[in-house]
Image 1: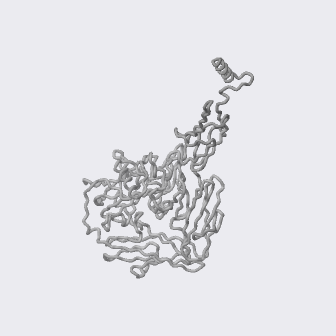
Image 2: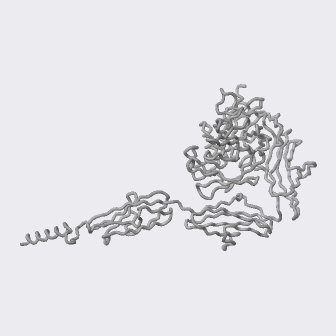
Image 3: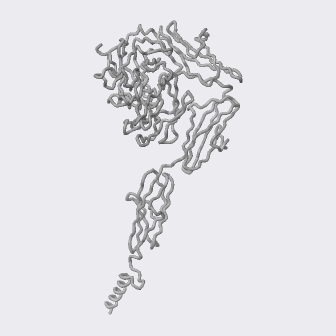
Length: 574
């Protein structure tokens, strides 16, 4: 009888779960069924933000839930709440299981970068100078995916002095003041701090040009018998008058911005420039001092003339450009200090690889382990990657190690070229580049002629985060030098055409004969000139600087940037 009862029960249960006639529920109807709350099964979230997924699960009561990423269960809750730390694409699997079965559903999560506002404000790192009581208008550009909020704070105050994007500053208290500008959106807040120097009048700004990045421009050198030319940039003046003093003595007849100083004896001299600017509001006086040390005549110096033919990198200071920080093409590996950048440049030239100097003003300084003597011929060469339609000319400068310290902190002499003295050539040009406040942005610039623009970001060719040298600690950097006009033509293709002679990375007549056209351009020390354009008549040189000389771009080719492959002494065996 018991056997018959058990058999009857088994048959009844089998009948219940084996058919669905007359609305009888089968086992499959009790298994979980997942429906996501996204029609495409794709979700989007920003890195650092929380994503919530609320699925509809049929037969989910009492079921177990597992949300799985890369084989790991990250949650067992019915509702998925998760923060993704990094941008990218992530696949998540939801697994739901009850006694009657299991269901799985995979979906994709696209994690985007946070996009707080990007602030662009062209203010030099040292700040701006404003006369007491005068107004200065700050007009930052702000890029944001949604409408941001703004605030300006003065001198560390807790309450904003303005909540508008643009701000007009005016203060009567003489001295430095700090402005903090903030822009915020749903993804975060960006800040920019600005120093405003309130002066008791419209002071002139006097800038002596440093010979290299870490050189103090108020320390100068000259050999006995030579003339030192001092020509500072003077800005923020209307009608200036100049006077020069040597050891406190007014130099009669020297009332121009450039002062030619020829010391009569070795020793130390204090040189002072005095700028008087007369305006309708009165007269302002600004002074700046420079120390000059006169060393023995170069004719009296014993020099070594034998050594390695290739020069070594002493300093590498590229301007922003598409190859700067580039890993794939240019071989960077996260350089973050000046020494690391120098070692990178040394290795590139030792390997015969191209070293890009970036946009206008970028340079490399190399030094020989001996002095290269002026013998009247082509004494040294600079190898580049120029071809007939790809010329990115660089100005070449030379220097003598007057103080004998092995550092390029003496006087530079520009080598004359075919464009020297022409109307379109500017020999006192300065460009200030501003570090972007966010990655993958163009690098903005302003110049001392009132111009402005940007080194364009070309993501399809060079997708590194920054084109601004990452070892520069300042938020802006100014480069000084001689600017050549851009010599670019556009037909079916872009072409950077050559100048006649006198420039690195330029296929001019000084590439010499076709038999020796090996990428080198050859240079004569006798083409070195002083600031007044006259021959310098140097007996020898110890350092060479190659500097990008064009401020411009050629469409998809990007900025015009000089490339250097090496610098060589060509006097061996002569």
